[in-house]
Length: 323
Image 1 (cartoon, rainbow, N blue to C red):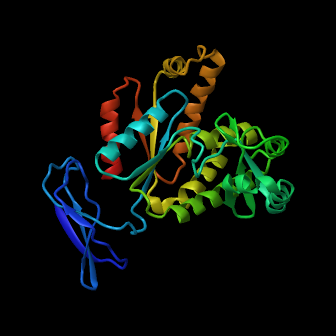
Image 2: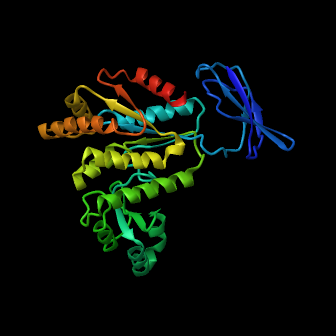
C-alpha cells in the first residue's frame, strides 16, 4: 500500500467515520484540519481489500476523477448485458456509477429520433406552439448555434401532430430528410459532448455508455454519408478528445461466431432468425470496427466472448477500470 499527501485547493466537508473498506478501492480521502485541507490518496495493491481501514465521507468536488467507459461491439455480442453487469459490480464495490444502455432516452451524448434545428427555426417553433413551450424546452439539447429536440421516448411520441411531423422532417441522424454536411454533424456532436463534460463535472466515479462512441456513430456515418475509415476515425477522435478529462476507456466485445451471437440475440429479443444479409452486414461491420479502432487516439481493450466466459471477462474489465 502506498500513501501520498497533497494540498487540496477545494474545501472538503468531513461528514463522518466508518470502518468500511470491503471491496472498495480508496481513491480519495480528505480531512479538514482547521484552515488547512489535506488529501490522503490510498491505493491498495489489490482492489479486493478486506475490511482493514477507515472510510471518511466528503463532499464531491475534485474535478477530473470521473472515468467514462464505452461498451462497444456489433449487434448481439452482449453490450447492454455487460453494461449492466459492470455497473452492478462497481456499485457493489462502493463506487458511484451511472449507466446508459442502448436507446435509453436520457442519454446525454447519444441520439435517436432527435430534430436538428437552427436557432431561428427553434425560436419559430416555440412561438408557433407556445402551449408546448415547456415540453419542448425540457426535451431540448443545447449545442453551439443549434438546438436538438428529442421527439420520441423509445416508441412513445413526446409531441402531438402537427408538431411531431415538423420535428420528424428535421431529423438529425436517423434517416434524415434533410441531410446536414458531415463536418456539421461532427461539429454538433463535439459541442454536445463538450457541454456534457462541463455539466457533469464529478458527479460520479464512473459513467458507462452502451454503444455511444463506436456502434451508433458508425451506423449513422456509413448509412448517411458512406464515410471512409479515415472520416469515421476523425469523428470518433474528436469525441474522444472532447471527453479526454474523464479518462475515456473502450471495452470492445468480440466474437469469432457472429452468426451464433446474432441467433441468440434474436431469440432473446423474440425476433425472427437473422437473415444471411444481416449476418453478412454485421460480419463486415466488425471488420470495419477493427480497422477504425486502430486509428483511434486511445487503446481499445478487446474481449473475446465467443466462449461466453462472462465472469472472467467482467473481472478483467474491473481490473482495467480501476487500476
